[in-house]
Picture 1 (cartoon, rainbow, N blue to C red):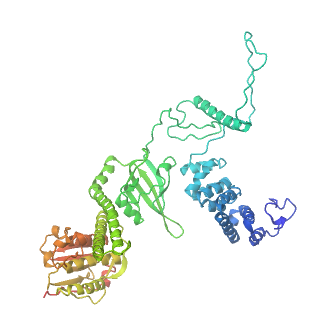
Picture 2 (picture 1 turned 60 degrees about the vertical axis):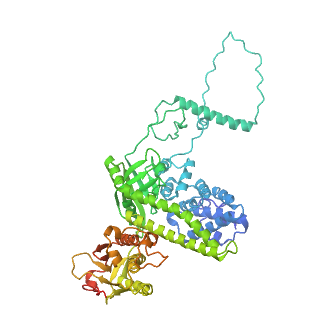
Picture 3 (picture 1 turned 90 degrees about the vertical axis):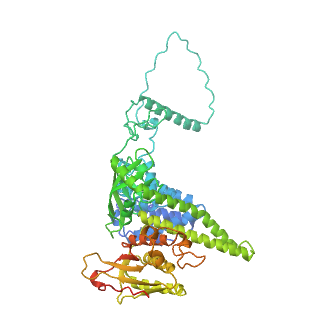
Length: 632
């Protein structure tokens, strides 16, 4: 490269050198130059960083984006070379970064590279104030080691929860530029005999450089002790961090022999939550205790957990009013909090950006009443899910080992053992399926399950027709007939397609499996009549077989053994309810329909399944779409 184009050799102001710079093509020249070898890549990296550092913030354009891309590519090649990670960090630390965009770009790298970028940053105070809120959290922490940020930047970092700055220099270094006043020599007493020759000093045990280093440490410790003894008791406010100042260069550190400061108990704390549900900012005094918590995890043993109502509001991006937050941790923030939060959305695009929340200490009655109301159901469901999780581990191991024996992974196996292993694997699969149904019912009944968004335009009539066609080969040999007259027009409901199909299959399978041989049953579908004042809803009328119709409601929806229900179940097989029985299957289907906005109830010898309609009643078919056929 010509010398006049090298940024390191060019003066800062070309006008002062007597040459007018008509066209500044230094950046294009560097981009056209091919970097040969590691040394050439490092030189070009420094050149590009220097040129980009001189660009004004409002003058950034497309060529500068291309230069930043080349800079990033060079840095990646240097870092991926053998032993290049340390070399890349050293190169970054030794290259001054004079533009906020460069600092922000490299601060988002790995922690070691982010530390090097923070050390190499050369920004004005206004640039720091605009850049610090956009920096990653780990990069903000590295700013503690800088002492040239200014009071405004230090105050901003303190508001963001970063206030443990580095200790100041020793007292002898702080007062190095001040004149030293020697004390007046004291006259020696006359009656004391002075030695004629001074005693010989012992030879130093360490070298001069080592003695100076150890001496500096000893002098710093002694200065700290003198400052500690001279400080009046109670000068620092309890709980307030002691920072070094020009008048007091040695901050007060917590020692074991000092009385503990009185603990503070805040009454309200302002926090910020991002779109993933993580606390990312809080009031400066309490940020280290709160940042990083995830209160919307819905885990019973999480250190920060919100009630189920607030968790559902977070999933729907709705405001949270008087939510109950339980915190574990430091005494200052542990306990129950009332959480009031409003969702925040980005200006560009309206994407969800999180919550701005305020935590307040609730009254004793407010803190205890919701917990007492939710404890019997919610905690019982949590214990059930935990038990099921602990049971899955050994059953998965048994199933996997049985499949390995059945597939002869370990070698040839007699067919009798392979048959037993296949039976064990099938039983384990049925147990795991039953566990999944149990956990799903517990989550649905406690409100912890998140139902997918409803699909518009699901034709319930077509779904029932398709599932009845699948059941015909099974119930045909027993001469069971399910009469069904589909409506002429589609009857559409608003529900998740997969969830609706599962719930309908449970109901129809229970009816088909418990029907006695030769039994005739009729199914009807009713849509709301145009002009009804009630909300638009679709009703599916399902008959109960004789073996189920004679039971009361408590027995009908109770879990029982699938083999004890009889009613046409195949020998050695399980019904649609799995190992929990048909009553459990009906209860699970009712919970699924409630979660979709509908319901399931019994009226005499029939089950009525209700679902929300997808369109207004005027667009639905008028009157009953089908009339129950006469049994026979």
